Image 1 (tube, rainbow, N blue to C red):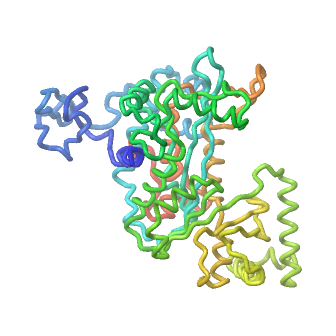
Image 2 (tube, one colour; image 1 turned 30 degrees about the horizontal axis):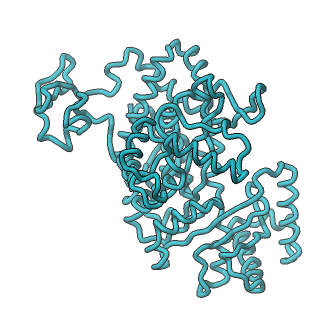
Image 3 (cartoon, one colour; image 1 turned 90 degrees about the vertical axis):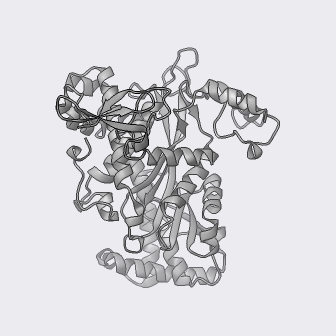
Length: 482
């Protein structure tokens, strides 16, 4: 629950709202509109912006245009676009003439403005999921940061867990396996004071993050089990703490349940073949599954297949469908999306009846798409009362394309997220000059790009994911949140 509360607090607090910024003050970070009892009006600035005074520490602060203290605010639009369109920090500084220090400050500014905008506008209770669809896809990708010290040249791997709305492509939640608010020494002190090292992790009060002691012991255990050969290829970040991945998965699922609590539409969650994800969603949506308002599906496919081999698999599936139905390849290509879906569902329903095998044990989908060759689907909530045609439709709609498409855009448009290159110095070590050294910057850029994808980047239909979902009537421009 600690990680769930952290995610909820991160999504519900507006860091751009006027509030006391004095370190140690009880009212620090509490906005004036939520806690008026801590503040009094204190005139206006020379430019006419309202000024406030904290009743507790007597410090004053003003509230006005977000970029009022920036000397080069005219570059904000260009900077925002560069950060979200595959530009390295070095090139950004060269083109804009800014220093790295100014660039990092501007990233902090963008992050605060994005969070403030989302707190105000990201309200899923106003979304009609009956109309826009209630199918979601969940998967994770591994992001790397460079080794922070020469003493141990080992990259740090951080999981990026995302859930996408399948029909619109809107990223409902993007969680990183990292907490910048706590230091490694604080985590060690909390673990030592709790005195829980002899208790199982499942029964500890403080088991949310990895400590260095537990991480080293776990690597030794894996080496004894011969799961890993060399333990010095793994390390924890030097700043912040690494959240346990299973804890992050459960917090992610609980936060999704909280976001979707206002809808009564039937929910359909499709996820990667990860045991932790299955347990997390089964636990978080237990009541909805029991009431038959939610279904879970697991998808696996050959991710390492070459492009030519993918085309061969798709062609074989089309030939198989043509042989079953007597419809030629040319006629299949001319069918509308709805007619093709009906034709495929009909054949898959017949196979399901003839197979007499529960879908929770797995089903090899015979008509795969190029993005998911040799697709295997497990319906974890399969019920005998469900009709074969309905089961066939669920098998067809069990896809990770929406979240995998976002991952591809994220790696392509955010320079630090590109796939790692192998270091020439040693096998197993990865390094790239565009990678970050500060994981907290990774958290900020990931949130900035999630906002850019959802609200600012229209697709071929000239609509953003937020417009397709029903959260916005038009594209959001930089002037709307800066």
